[in-house]
Image (cartoon, rainbow, N blue to C red; front, side, top):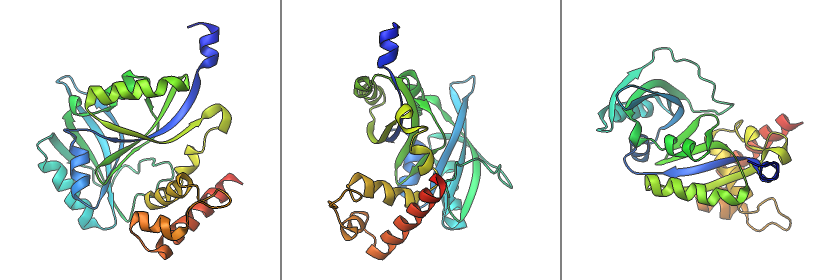
Length: 239
């Protein structure tokens, strides 16, 4: 790489919303109310990988049902529940009222992570998995114009759908706004990112709180409560 090429590269933080076939975690979270945090995985000699996950939900029953579904999935080889939990670092993410840490063994070919890493996307922090989608926080160093080609390569390799939900330059944001979004609960992050994406914070505003609430199929009061809590957390941390 020449010096000129290096100068054209950016260090970019992205949040990718991902779905792909033959993925047990997408299947079980699409069918149950609970979700998963993927903390990482290591390869085994037989072509499988073993990953560490936290199942989370509003109730113990929701979490237990998700763990049972994971164990029953034809795409998993084994599930080990960790008594007492490992108190994993979730980067400020509030996973819910009930959690269960689990080791899950499954085929490496069913994971999208090798395709992401081989195309220069480095996994940064836990992957949130809920409602049948994975939300990958990744870092990439490349000219911004190359991102679409790299993502298209992953899409074709894994027959995946990938949407970029957030992108920022590390250099321009002194660490990026992604680190602050990690402070929010799943729902707080969802409503805050929707509000920002729909230009609620532009003036004059381009969307109302009622319209945003309708998009998530929740009441305006509930949406406003989540949004105000998110704003309070972000402002307190930035100051």
